[in-house]
Image 1: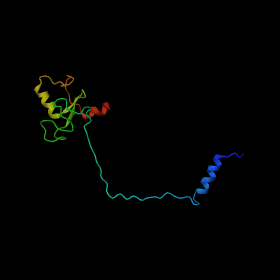
Image 2 (image 1 turned 60 degrees about the vertical axis):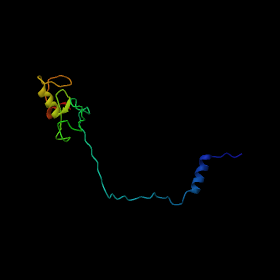
Image 3 (image 1 turned 90 degrees about the vertical axis):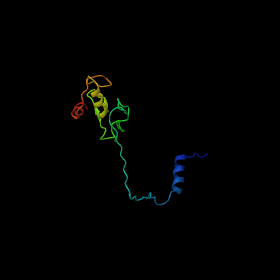
Image 4 (image 1 turned 30 degrees about the vertical axis):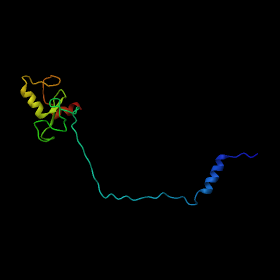
Length: 118
């Protein structure tokens, strides 16, 4: 009756099969020929559409021809966002200057307000 030590047997068998010199993995060199980048942007408005015209902020208001500079997004101190053209038209048609969503007194939020609250 022989007892086999399987751990030492496996080590012996693997040693017999292993090459005499340890092989190093091949290293490949990579040369970058072209670099293409992609960027995207979106308004950080908390909502995807204007509350007045219901058009997306990355689109444009009905009065603007092109999105972006022709149709900027503006925020009120109440934190609701609208296209500039939409809110100015809304405010000029109302007797009281109120946000069309929450009905608070409308005031444009300044860039300094962002720095203080965030």
